[in-house]
Image (cartoon, rainbow, N blue to C red; front, side, top):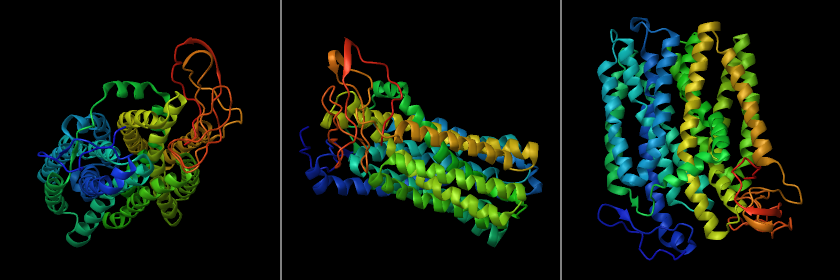
Length: 514
């Protein structure tokens, strides 16, 4: 590919016409500086989006008996924004290419003024439950911003820095959850539960500032275009849905627990609002701070090993929480639940890092190499991220609905935690069987291309610290090559396929190391 000749300086309307972060000279001299600037203001806007998305996890702490809403009703209030945010992530993914990353960031930030203003208007005793539900649903707008922000930043960075950049972008955004909860604590601790509008007095100006700064300092990338063919191809690829299952386990847990933590403390351990608020923000804070660390660890050691370790730790921490819930021991429950936040944060970063690597590996399995493989991986991973992010956010809805039913039926969160433990066991098995299992020396056969004897078949080596794991050998050789995206040789090769019709096989979830 010809390196960009433009100076990476936006023209009128802040459009950059040429962008190739994989070109090392361009990236070192011009690209990294521009990408970093866009990342900073993307984080600010996404931070505001997450704060608004989780706003009702704070508002329910202000809702005393005078509001007439029972614990099950409160869990449903915090579940509704999760559903709306998850659904909006799909169209938000495509909005970046349609309107430009900078333009859509500004539009989505300004849109946050609708739910924040509406919440300030209705937040008082006597408001109907249906009105609360409607306004809570509006805050789902904040959840959609993650998909567009991720799609935008993914386009700015080269493959070898995506784990850190995407982790920092998402982690900074995730910090919006503990931040708004901390603001809620300060309001409850100083002014009491009768003044929820003071929280909005902080966030409405923040939204305005974020939108203005994004308009002044961010850029649109002209080469980023919607590719409906890539979206369809990603939707048909089994790995999109396998990664969605894993991301539901990590991010779905993080966002679901973040929204529900305070209510669990109030409902199961009978903490007062100020007591619950004084603890609620700590878990999301730890998880958010460690998300970039998970991405960095995945950059170095591979996404699958870190993700596998995260799910193992999540299962262990959930076992502690189940025991604590059964014994009604807050002293045991808190460290177990906070440990869950820590490992979900690490898993969020490592799982999202796996996505570009999975599709780069799929490209190599199809016989592509070099820039062709990189372009294919970028094309499909960008399309898949929106779907995976949307499904992952639905996990947060599942967490809150599970808590709602558990408290309605058993007046305890224990049945819900047992269900979560089973899900983490499933994620462990999938990570091990599909993305972590070592390749045999003779290589593995994937979908074949071309006719005749010895068509190229997709087999991938163990990736070490690299995303696109393993290299391609010659047809039928089973000898590992060196991946174009990696510094280390892969362990597995490419086995020959006994030719035939020349038609490419249907995608199937062959094992992939990333």
